[in-house]
Image 1 (tube, helix red, strand yellow):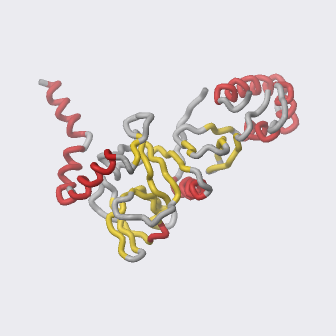
Image 2: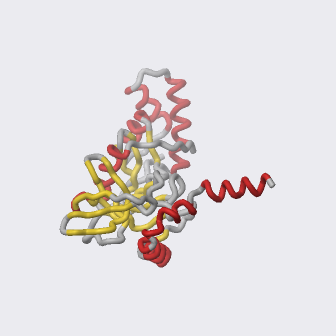
Image 3: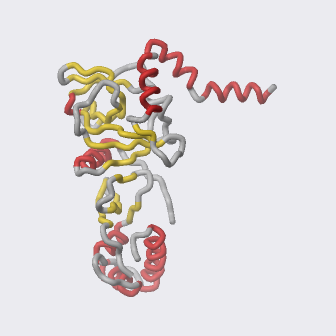
Length: 88
Length: 161
């Protein structure tokens, strides 16, 4: 998988929101926001191929959680990112 | 996907919106408050805002910081020198600010859940604006008549019969 180009993270009022580069209008009535750990993963998989294992190991490096729950979180996150259309 | 609505404090959020506008984006914001009724309804409608690029004029709906951290999206009713008087369409009273306190223009509105915005350059907004500003002397009665509780009360009465 790969992060689609041009989706930049941006902090607005302590919310990590995804803003598409080159998009003229930013619609705050429907915004993609990420929690701290998702934002951390997003920053670390820019411009590279990644898979679920890579995300799991990134999570384990940064947070004190067990691998099983990291994997559950990652699986859910990948589904959400796909639905949001920000990875391909 | 999970969707949730998050409310943000105007005094923190809107300065960041202004910054985004000044980077050249436009921004769509859900509207809160009843001060731009009857055209714009609280929680229902959205505004598209753009940075201030030209001189504001009477009749423009603008985002203004009328005091530190206090923003309103109201219509300009008077400009004298650098003093601007604003009045929400749903209000009777006015606010005033300086011309440099005008932070953004409303350029269009999404109303009634539609996907197509009504531009402030379009006939609908212009005709509404023309009438609404001229009807100011009887505005208090119009607002009362347009108040959502009135039709509701009538409906309830009919139902009871």
